[in-house]
Length: 294
Ligand code: SF4
Image (cartoon, rainbow, N blue to C red; front, top):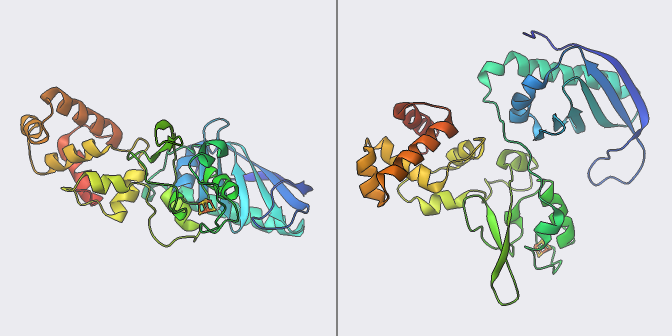
């Protein structure tokens, strides 16, 4: 059990590889230091609260921005950049470790976010765009927009020509010249991280199909965020089943109401339990009610 995160061996070098967004290319100071213990257990909590956070599995790390500095935290070390000079490093490291200790102290109050960063290639995304470079998204070219979207640093909805997602998984159809679907591209954009960039003021259109496909449910922006932060999001059908469970319907009644077999209902219920980490209908309904989903 760790009560306090300690660190040692701070070093800095003048060949920082990371530059601030929009900055001209020049060398920046990069810092490196080590933790006294393995802090990987804290990664989902850091992922939940840090700005522009990305949780990676291989290699195991969490990447985020702290006070304008990119930080890459591994289980036993941290690399941070850019700094304008070596003198800034020690003060920053103390502040960053203080931030991590604050997360450690408030761990019980934070809902951990296990969602792993999903990279989508620029090539895949560019197939969705008209490549007119019209600039309406705020980027000079479609390629620049695609590059930022692939890094989850902008939102699909900023391009008015990208089309509508065809499922709740935010999967876009890729069509050929005569309109036939030839493949698809699935995007995973974290709503909280993207809104933290300040480019848009509203919850993006990441999960609108939940609302469209479930008129009986009252899915709000907050509930959309709750759904988006589940490690394995609920499908629209599962939300419908959950809503009917909230009305006190039994499995046979849900089966009649949705015109699906009792076996399918049972399967949806099991999936809901697994996704929410509960083992009782009441717990599932309470979770949904707490998050404004039903
Ligand atoms: S708005 Fe869409 S089409 Fe226009 S430049 Fe941006 S990505 Fe390209």
